[in-house]
Image (cartoon, rainbow, N blue to C red; front, side):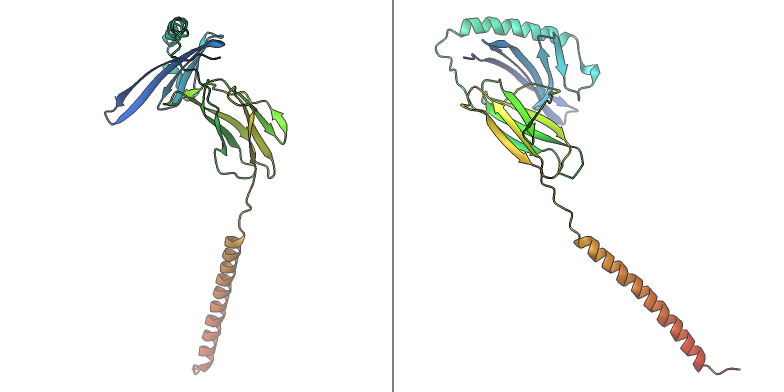
Length: 240
């Protein structure tokens, strides 16, 4: 069973004395896996530590000038600290070891338009411990999608949430699924999402075409009457 030791350091600081931001640094130790460490800013990922590769994985939105080399040294320090605390605390019978199954919601990032690139999002929330397996399928065929930024973000109640993303091009009738495996689930949980593209209404085009036709007829009719009127006036006027 997972033993969770979660230490959170959060704070607020001002930018231009107008806006307050929350910086959250989270790390946790587990009996069955290595330490997990990540930093968020207003709930957006900044970086997480990959201790196997001995590097920090920075979010692509963070400029490279902010990739400070000393941050990984601090990550190593927190890992050592966390492992030591776990050995002291895991014998404490008062520590509650609970499992919480995830809630799953599946949706598209943008409005679905035929043949326009889009992204499907599988939002997995309120789960503990922070370890899950995710499988995407398209029309019952498993897809291999490498997550560019894999980290679980903490909720205020100690559970975690995670966004899994799949880039796709909508084709009417395609069916996608997101399957989540978690130790608090008796069986894997799957959400389905079917591409439904509404055809654009032809009403505005018909009314526009009708209006244009009537406008042209009006111009032609007006010109005809104007010419005819001048001709009639010329006939009535006496010559000489």
